[in-house]
Amino acid sequence: MSDLSFKKFTSNLSERRYIGPQGTTEFKKLSPKMRAAINDIYSMINKASDPIVSKIEGIIRAVSKKHGVSTYDIEDYFDNELIK
Image 1 (tube, one colour):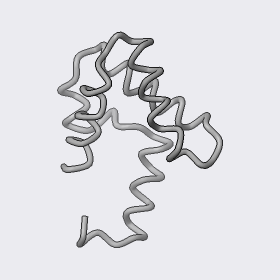
Image 2 (tube, rainbow, N blue to C red):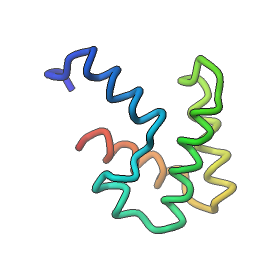
Image 3 (cartoon, rainbow, N blue to C red):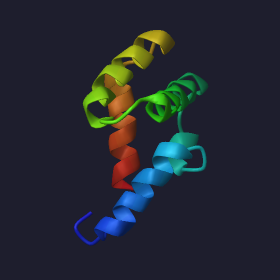
Image 4 (tube, rainbow, N blue to C red):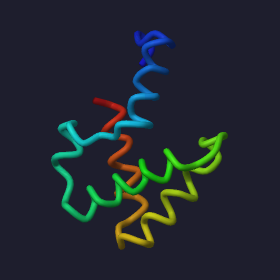
């Protein structure tokens, strides 16, 4: 990420916020249950008012309960998505 310019980073962040990850390799590896959970997270983020950063943890917990997936698995997905 050190070689990624701030402008490009914020552009990528904005795209992820509004579009979601449907076309990425990591997303395609997920089970249908996890895909639904990730899509739900992006949907909730899009509906949330600013500041979003303070709400991410609560959104992940709520979606985890709703879809019956582990918060660890959701966080692991985002880690893998950001690394690639």
